[in-house]
Image 1 (cartoon, rainbow, N blue to C red):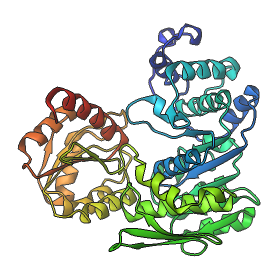
Image 2 (image 1 turned 90 degrees about the horizontal axis):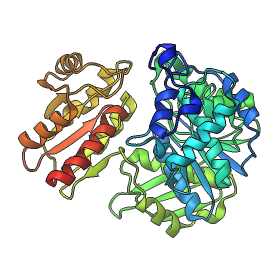
Image 3 (image 1 turned 180 degrees about the vertical axis):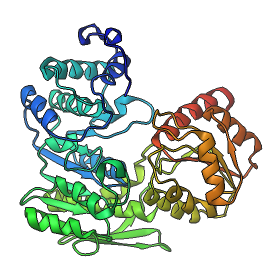
Image 4 (image 1 turned 60 degrees about the vertical axis):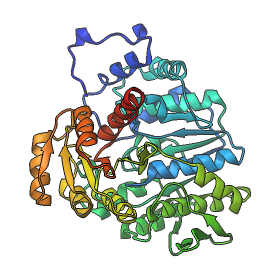
Length: 440
């Protein structure tokens, strides 16, 4: 977070534009991340918001954004009024707060910020906590009847968990955010399991299940449903279809989702299991599910750019996500030379991110991600060269790295940009600029 002299911090009443508000939010708390529900619950109570008809939480280490987008899309196609809250954003803050699939406009968000500030009474909310409360204000004012809320970090102490859910998804559990959540998978799983509630369904979207997930579910009395035990999927690679089986519903001949990779079928399966257990049977129709998931795209998740599919963006920022990216790269045919532009945050497990990518990458270019928490490009390059036994170029400027890669890579080469939201987001913005100017 930014540290400014008190005299340099503007009063909230003087703030007008969304950028002004977002800059101001960075000054409210001495910590960028300060897990705990007390402050959020206090301000949420003062807001006196009406409860929505239904709330779904989406937690997990990886795949949360994809699951939230799938759930949002299926609910919208079923005629529900949906408010969806996700984080972080790639290009604009507005992406975090969507009503019926459309990002809230600046005016709606600023009005919600003012509503939160009017009852905050000096409590030091973090940037994420303030934004979470503002999203809830936007959703109430929009009349959305169903909320899809992505947990920001962990679960038990995350600001989103201040909102009582009707059901939830935990996509998977792997090592990430260890400084805040714990150094091993079982400890992290306890934090993820904090979204569980007595008598309410929670879907676990992986067949690798930490013991803590089942233990907490039993202790709390949650209705836990696990991939491979309570629901499953099978893909027919030759036919290009897949089948989903729940406890009472079977969907055969489903078209493969546009979001590629086995892990995306796991995500889709978890979403369908949630819809089944929460009584949304009218949404579990083969044709509508196929059509919705085929049309869906999520920025930064194995996202192709350009008609020639020369550019590929993926926000893989931990070992589990990097392994999934590597699996998707290995499935590409024919094999193409790959130049990878990578920028990561300093608190990430770099070896676990780089190792799965090494067999698929011919040339690495290290950049400094656009974040105060970024690992500096020179240190990143040294580590990548050591881990991969391949040379790694150093380019501090992301735009320069992209231009260089586009110039030196072979005509049939693939340029991959990965490692962090704070690398992929700026890269997506730069690509659009260059595409408009030069036809990339």
